[in-house]
Amino acid sequence: MEDIKYVNTTKEEFLSKKLLFKYMPLEFALGTIKEKYLWLCNPIIWKDPFEKWFIEAKYQVNNKEEDFPLKGKLFCSCMTQTRTSEAHWNNYSKGQIGISFIINREELVKVLETHTKQYDVYIGKVKYIKTNDFKKKISKIPGIGTIQPVILSNHELLIKLLLLKRIAFTYEDEIRIIVVKKNKTKENGIKLPYTIQPSDLIEGITIDPNVGENVEVMLKDLFKNQYGFSKVYKSQLYSMPNNIKIEL
Image (cartoon, rainbow, N blue to C red):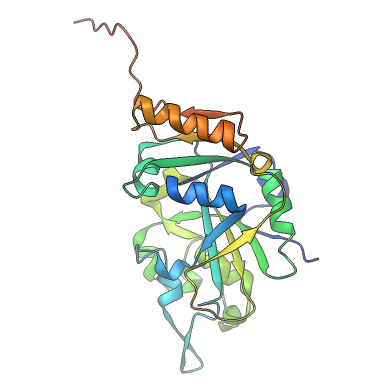
């Protein structure tokens, strides 16, 4: 079994915190729990052009133009180290009821380790750079360092490029799970199945702060009684305290 590779972080640093947070629409959350899998997306379908800047780019090597070598082989799951924010709910619920999984890092590593024979698996910490930095020579991009054309055969350096994001998104404090397939594919995503109980991997579930009382009760009943989660909360992002008093 191959080891998981850690980029911009170490295994010790990654596991020094207990939890990660994964936001998604309700329909998607129910599917991943029911079928017991992690979903990783092909980044080529991301809407933000800067998210796939280095995947779509052409590379000049020895007077030849080449594609990004891992294009069509990469799949990614984006998680955050920030427990909650309005931006997360708005961006990742996609206009539907949003759900946040509270993920146990140690259990996540164990699940990913079961797939290292089939895929190259990376856990990477995102670095945030200025928009103009994306347009620089690779060797001039902060955090990348001096790079020779051999970069196109160095997977870890290629993964580093995929861990660059615009500084406007620093609030996300993002961790990316990245897997690389052996062969190219046109799939929009892949499923990484696991055999443990979902409630072992997902320590708790947070429900969209915008849902009404009846929907909250229904979803808590579903997650607790049908799927066995003991910790199910509604986000208190928009909760108002009682008896507000303002002095003039």
